[in-house]
Length: 205
Picture (cartoon, helix red, strand yellow):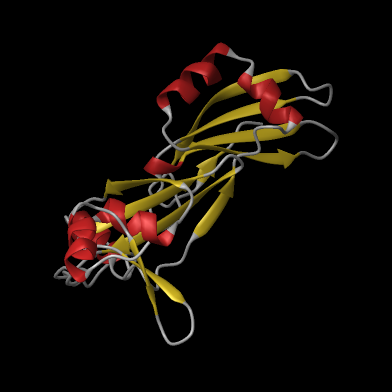
């Protein structure tokens, strides 16, 4: 289906995407100031969402949900925000340290890296973890849930549940829910994992 320039402009203004020919391949175009439209162009064929990020209306997290995985990209839209220089010493202003940490974490959509997180919903360890009432409530609350599975020495597994909406571009989620299974596949411990300012995680043993 072909569109006139005015029709294509109206579609872009409404948050849609358009395909256009280049010298080699077709490209996808979207309104660069509409985060949801950018997500549609970056992740064609997926169920996409865009969430605003802290400290700037130009910073967005883009999510593309598929049946077996979720793709995430952190982008900056429009002109880059004014950055504040970090304090000169480690003991300086904590707010400025956070702003400094964000520098460079939200590149333009065309060059923003994409991370893929498997859902692992069919893994036996994840199914066992999902059988608890606590995880059922967590999944009802989580918007972009993924599960990581670590096989432990001597048998057993550690299932780490993460809601990707609380994960920043620096990689540390705001919180995770962890379930430990013994060698027989029975749950022996569960609860939220404590995350320190350094990004370290205190796992259960």
